Length: 349
Image 1 (cartoon, one colour):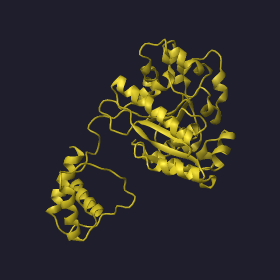
Image 2 (spheres, helix red, strand yellow):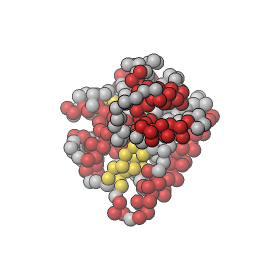
Image 3 (cartoon, helix red, strand yellow):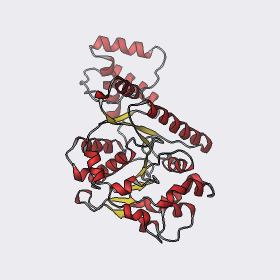
Image 4 (spheres, helix red, strand yellow):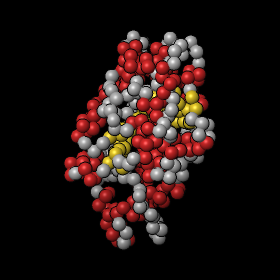
């Protein structure tokens, strides 16, 4: 049922039901829909007569309706693996930190997770202690599986993070040094937008979530990653999609506009839907001045995409990266680690 119809049915049932219990609305997410002309005023007047706020009245109405119309215990259509790209064409904003942290938290929580280092610079691969794999001679690479020249099994490229906390559930597809030529190579591939999907398809049954650490650039390289996280037929809204780490500065506002423009252009030309899951304000420190505070406020006002989390500028993440130790192993009880666990819960796995 459409949410507008459901809301109208809920309010009608509320009118006919007395003595409803108070609903706890603390921490509830904002949502909105249209109601028939005059209905909001009529409902507000009824709330006033019952001595409840408009928000509480809506909460009671929706709770009443949901209790009478419970959701199916499972999606009506089998859902594909969750696919998320952590993307921002601006470098140095924490893409690797966020993608790695969320993946670690998901694996810690019991999910099977694949981390794909899609950044030609290979920071994710290096920070997890696998830098040597980027320069091995005679081995196939993700790029070769994307352009069709690979002859082996892509499973052979994977390495496992063997720390006990991940339970063997967290794997990495490392970067390789030919990734710098990816844009050029993709320009020669038929239907290049689907190249990453064709390469990763054999892996999808093995994982619950695939997290892609995106490149600090736009172009064909980004198009293939964006196309991969599009909403597939029958897939629930806001299940797969894009997460963007940002700083509280003007450069990031411009970078997000450019990324959104590329996403929207790809959606229009490919007739697809790519969900923007949200922003993460990284390395935030209010002591850096009023401009930083104002930029954060501007991000906070954004409803599309919404702000999922604000991460403070703390040293633990840098120390973990420099020491080539996963964050949830190096400082499992830190503020940064807890934020990653909270972000992992946002994903509809």
